[in-house]
Amino acid sequence: MTDLDEKRGARGRRASLVVAGAVVAAVVAVAGALGLGGGGDEGPEALPRAGSTVPVTRATLTERTTVDGTLGYGPEIPLPVKATGTVTWLPAPGTTAERGDTLLRVDDRPTVLLYGALPMYRDLGPARTAPAAPESDESGESGEPGEPGEPGKGAHPAAQEPAPVRGMDVMQFETNLAALGYTGFTVDETFTEGTAAAVERWQKSLGLPQTGTVGVGDVVYSAGRIRIGRPGVRLGAAVGEGALSYTGTTHKVVVNASAAEASWAVRGAGVTIRLPDETAVKGRVASVGKQADEAEGGGGTGERAATVPVTLTIKDQEAVGKWESGPVTVAYVGRRAENVLTVPVATLVALAEGGHGLEKADGTFVAVKTGLFADGDVEVSGPAVREGLKVRIPE
Image (cartoon, rainbow, N blue to C red; front, top):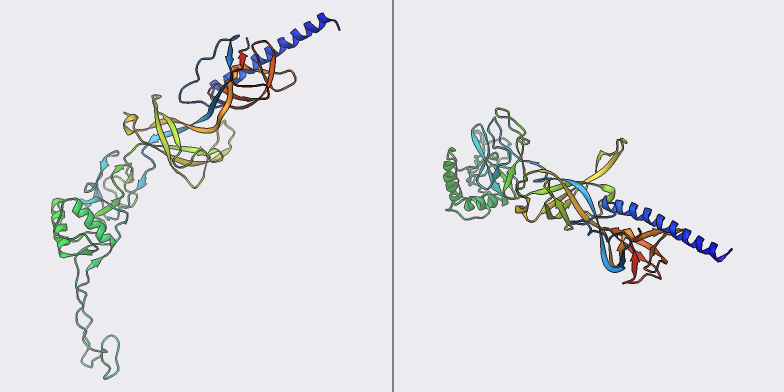
């Protein structure tokens, strides 16, 4: 082979390398634009024009992936309403209720919201005198006959002393009563006559008969302020535990994440949430469901993919603005490559012998191994690659 033939062959191989490099660069650039290799809060900076050179830099690459979510106030939870009767008033959905507010009316009697962890499970009132035992007949026999002369059998027992109502539920109720401004009793585990007198004043303010006793259906407890959800009954219907639902009062985002790809959903992990108007706000993973649900798969394949609910909190509630609900996108951090050599993805070329390479400023090529793709850049490594090396953007 002549020198001329060798030169022509070298030029041909170089031309094929450049063409292949342009194809690879175009494909990778499109993938990056579509977010297939990551994506930050802001798009990657504009790449240098074709034919120019850029340096190999050392940086940290972060892969970000986006998933769809729903803005709202979290899942609605049924209120444990224990009143019985007919629903005569319901609040409007979206109403905020706090301690002392009426949640609904049953038989025109209010059910009031108080704060606490214990549910209302019994009536609370002052001590009542226990009934005396039945009297015995003239023979000295009562319900159970006793042996003659045996003390305590067949005798008339004395009436028992009043038994005060005690328990942590009493303290919880008294704590709320005091917080509403009613006094005259000690907040403890005993329902006293002073408590009953304060209850009577509270009942008067609610327009109720002043009995001094709190019925099991008069109160519903929650951890704090709530937002009224959709009612489960209509006016005039019989009340039940599903009569009214509620949520918290702060905006949240729920993501039905793929169970197979939910490793990012770790309690406390930071995410970026884009609202319907593209405003970006910071969020954190608050909880991850422990039970996977089946959801319809995409693409019309009829397949079903398991998902888990992931609840995200938003620290800056004012940043949500006017939005009460709606679809959002959530960007989370996937993989990270710290302190690695990086180049723009557009600098990659396909080598004739396989793999990828970079074209140096002098027109020669060096083979590289690619790593993480993110934000329009790619991690590269190889014995001939160093920080500051000038590489060319293929034309």
